[in-house]
Image (cartoon, rainbow, N blue to C red; front, top):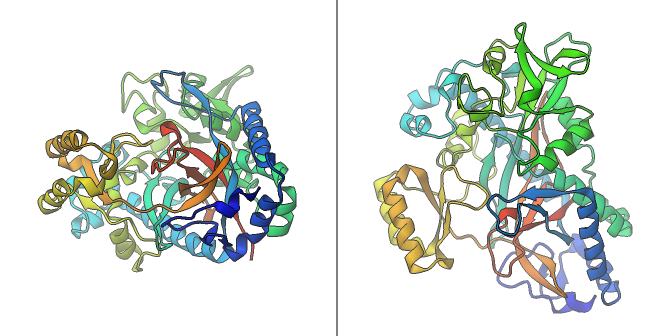
Length: 478
């Protein structure tokens, strides 16, 4: 596979190469293995890997797609590799960030010290879409709100990692991490032995342990369920996969009922008490008696038994306030305020359009900025100024002026790239990284995460709904 000899790292941070023909020392065994493959072998392995993913049913759903809603997650066979020292630094930064965000959630639904002390304006918190007044004075087990977090990281041209956003409601993608690894171990078995790659297959047991940690003390055999919106949800494959891997029941709202003061599950033998719910539905749909009255996905009365401490929910309701991209801009202040520490992982520099001076700067520089809606995800509600037309920028400017609270802007980063097989060529494609963090008895950072890759030449959008795919992420042991 001599294509690597012609690979151009370009003017970006390349995760494999320091310069053309000069691999990073920790990745040399993999580069040598790829180079040794006969012509066409890598492409054949790529096709085989994609077929395995298809057979596993590793799908996601794109709503409104003309060519059909259910798709196989595109998968690239050339992995991202992270050395041990680099991963340890990321791990420390992620633990710090989650500790601060968890304290923020407890505070904002409790004493609200951070508001009283003027660190974050009250109107920003109360206008956040994910801020839920019914969650005030909740007391989740152990004071833990964000049990499962997916934090998106990007690396800039100089090699610095930045936090792009936090996902504290129902972060998805971990199933692809596990399935990607299963495929890769059969594709490069010799390289796995040589590079000492940290395993990822223990995630389901760590997740189950995190969930059981929420159950009331003294229960000999707590019942855990995964609550899904159903088979038409974009991440249904993952819901069923995780339930199967943990050995717990996958349920929909219609399978549950509040009876005798507890949440109970309908079974062939009658009702059975449920102690912990790993919910994969948004807060608004969880209880039609409190939130959206038209919801058919949740359970009427669930909020009341949750507030009474008779059932635990992961993640806690109300965590969506910390997903808001405007609130994201204040996480460094949260870390300093709650922990008395400087942030170990920086945010991407962010302009807040609700502030008049920053709004003026954004409107004058739309051609060089990325503008994001505060509550959109999946690559929607976003303008990449350098790739947009003048008409698109003008239209977006009107949206911003109509609702400045709903928008932030950031400089266009030169996202790092990883060699990617596109057709018969190996080209550099931009990537991000979503590590998964579990907060149980302590904070656990799963080694690796989901590397999403923009599989269109030159694209900066890595979301699967926008044509992106994924790679296996190899974290090396020391």
